[in-house]
Length: 100
Image (tube, rainbow, N blue to C red; front, side):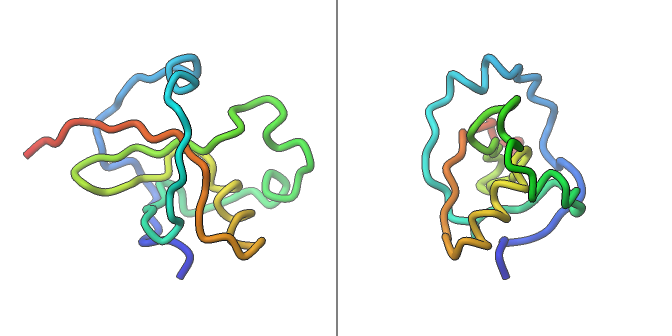
C-alpha cells in the first residue's frame, strides 16, 4: 500500500491557512506510508500534466493532527513520487494542536 490510509474528508478542524502562510512553512521529507489522504479521487489530467505545479505550491501540504499526518493538498505529487519508486515526499507540514 502506498499510503497509511485513504480518506475522503478532512477530520481535523479548519485551520484557515492562506497560500502565503503555507509558503512560510519550510518543507521537509514525509514518508508516503505515514500519510492519510483527504481525497479518494484524483483527476488523471492533473496527475499527468507537465505543468501541474506551475500555478501552485511546489510542495504538498500536510496537516499533522492528533499524531496523524493528513495529505491535504498534493495527492498528484504523492502519486508521482510513488510511480517513480520514491517512498518520500517533500511537503510543508502544519502542526495543529491536539483536541484531547
